[in-house]
Length: 155
Image (cartoon, rainbow, N blue to C red):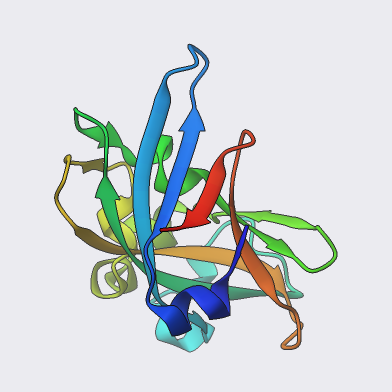
């Protein structure tokens, strides 16, 4: 696991690898450009967002991704497998919502739409964003991790 603040400050690329059900490796790299708290007023028609908890806060992570597999991969096989882990080991997956991630104007301008049900070509840097639903705690420190016991390490 890599601390988000450290990943942003260093500007380093993070090597990510996880295995699918057939034990085939899925490899990609990410570079975290920013991680910021969202204000719902930035989003057009925020009332259309489903499953948003009243006490939660949305955070936007802007990333660059490079697919290291020989073939194009669906985003659900790589970037949507990312998760955040806080300093108490609580896990927070990428927050997915059709309105927020695809249909809103905000999805287009923020980069959320790029990864929503998309494909990432090999060896080509792709810029987009992910959103996370997190507790309202400005002092929490988050670490980047990967589902299914995947590996995330600084390159």
